[in-house]
Length: 310
Image 1: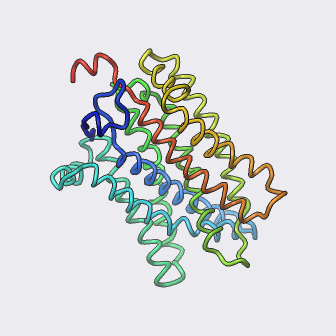
Image 2: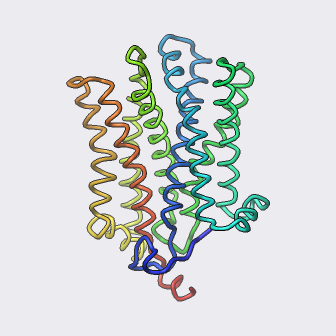
Image 3: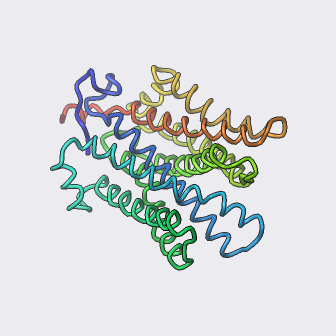
């Protein structure tokens, strides 16, 4: 769904007549991070089942936090989606017509992932030990939904052909990588914050987050380079990010805080206590992931043809 705003309510005022609001920015971030957290946890469990070792068991134990974080993040995402829809009638249409739009498909993926992750987390809290068959079923179903949710957060925007800046597969790739990065960061943040001092937080998962950060930076650069040469409208959106009013949020929040600082902490991890380094860098990744979605949404401009049609 696209929400119409007055000039006072719009995320940006120049070049846009219709934009997504803050509710959708939060929805994209929370849904992506929740999908990434579940996928990372499920992948770690599958890896431990296939290749049993002390390292794989430690990684799977660390990633258990992802099974508890995912349903919480997905529920929050659903709340923001309902707030954006604005009334019960629109929410009902999304629920009863799952193939009506990209947002409807995504909403159902969010609901299915919430159910799978919530069932797994609830069973673990109540019973303490989850039967292997039940865990495998939830991991397979939830893993498929998690991949769908991560891809959908980018597809929701790139499917809007009237906005040249979003109309590229690179945006889907960017949101998938960012979602994985934020999901891993959420797991590491929870473990580094809540785990007792004797608990061994997996450094392997944290290092995987650093690799994802490098990939995210490369995909972001490819996205901007591609769109800068796409159309004049897309180039104007890139300029808004790189040198315009969104430059402080983009360079300071996305590039520096979300990408450069975590990678610098990884490089200097031998000079500081490991757990504070994990907590600080992962928190920066989460903040950068939210600001990335804000910048991508806020930089969008409709083509002149689309504006005249409106």
